[in-house]
Length: 533
Image 1 (spheres, rainbow, N blue to C red):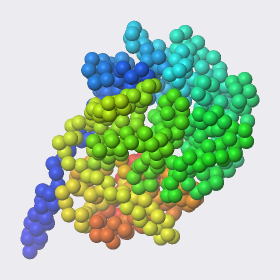
Image 2 (tube, helix red, strand yellow):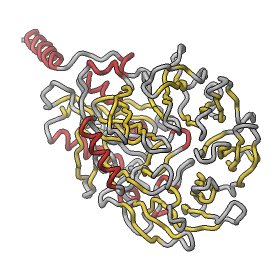
Image 3 (tube, helix red, strand yellow):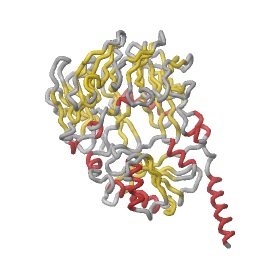
Image 4 (cartoon, rainbow, N blue to C red):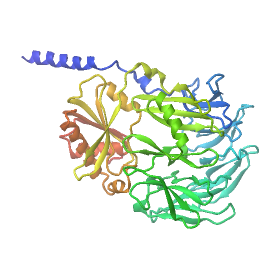
């Protein structure tokens, strides 16, 4: 009888395994992208991107718009290049890179004519970040550095021809990021007062004028991007010359894009809002995070604003932009993101993003309306079947709506599956309906994956964000338990085969979950989570 049970179990496991698609090798799933982060030159004649060199390190490549005549223009070793940009005249590539992982990035320039690479911030132990460029003012850039005082990041102007570095503005100690106006004069800043917890939008009327507090946001009304190093709540200066475009929840529960008067900071107009979520934020690598807003490349007018409750979407302000996005969407699946365009606004580089495929990039000609595929980040995945994320809204025990994502292994009956509760870090972060190699790796191996935006996660409004106050090891973790119970009640998860897994805050939450509810979890994986010995 015992032998019969063993044989039955083996046959059942083999049957389940046979329904799954072929295993995706780890070397493919977690490989460097073949190409990523494409950008068009200011004049629209050239294309750049990040790709591995002969040492498998991500460096900057340039070539024709169709990708031909490609050649590597940087030759960094060690860590990959994470951020780069075209100079305003298209003659140089600017990029940030540190020295073999010392996490002290310098700003470099690679001359596309001479192939000469220069360290524009050649100061030992000095960080460079918050780089500001403008194609109408190609001769210089602004960069934040802790050159004067190692504990404070001041703003400097760097001459791209001579390499001269001049102090533009001293940081009083609380400025997170700066923003320049349409004349490339630094006139606005996002600041955070660590003593009071207030976020401050500062303004000056000119380069030689004093700074003043334009908008002061108390801690309980502040959005996370106004509280973190390299964070910004400012999208730019409005073309009317009388107002500033900022992301604010000062007078609402959700972060919304508003126009504030430059004279008194009065919130004059609400440009875009969503009743269920904040304005989205875009991660600009080593430059930090800022509101996800599409501005006209010359005039600076708002054209579209991104929101993301369960899935990302644009709220369009410019009807012509909306028409072109709809045209592109008919040919390219997924969420369409405008990642770069030339100064003439004719050549667009757009990305098609979805949870069950690596990102594909296209070139779109606004005059001819022709869409041409450039490349996919991980083309080796094309022959494999991946699993889409399913957005679900789960009620917490105290009535909060918890936006979560369930990924089911492709090709299997979604009943009583082994489930991995994959917990995001932060906690001031969020999970989204996007492609993640880790999620696909687990699903490909037969695990259902549940990702939960527990209370305190960002993007869902002030009330939801503040519900996480003093709840790091309590209410946040209980939200995870409620989500697991939901998966069991829905019949998706096998209650005897549930694992918790996460990094940083996700690692801490994993350990806390195992401590609080050992009956609920079979095991857990803590990835660099803070813990007592």
